[in-house]
Length: 170
Image 1: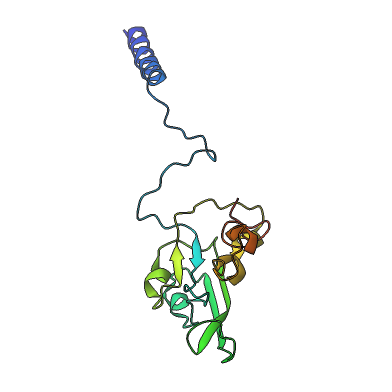
Image 2: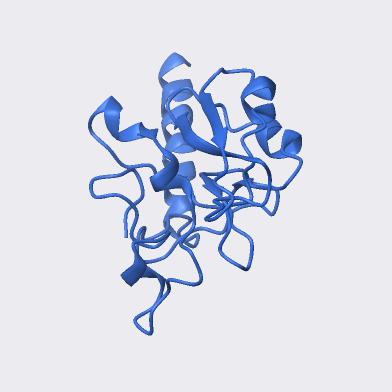
């Protein structure tokens, strides 16, 4: 009787295995094809700009206060009246995010009164050292549309290219 139970269990296990042989594949040939992410997915951060090229971030530090993981560092400075960086009186001269500490909760995005910080659907974090995941304002800020050339945004060192060796590929 015990031998019959063992044979039956083996047959059930092999039946499950053979059943999957005839089903369509669920794997994706990444990175050639990417699996679609949910509409509300929160991925990598960007610091957005206004259409005129000024940064939206005014250095209010509300995103830093709202972050439960304490991974955002913002330091503000006074705007130069002759060459402003942002439309407010201040701008964020230092903006850093530690992506390894970040829990991608979106509280920073909710707290921002100007809509400067946004979480994108990008999720391809690549790096071998911790320092590659500590990103600064240069890495986060989208390219200035006034400086974009005919070659496209990658020529101005923008979002498609990112910092050399940074966590975003391509």
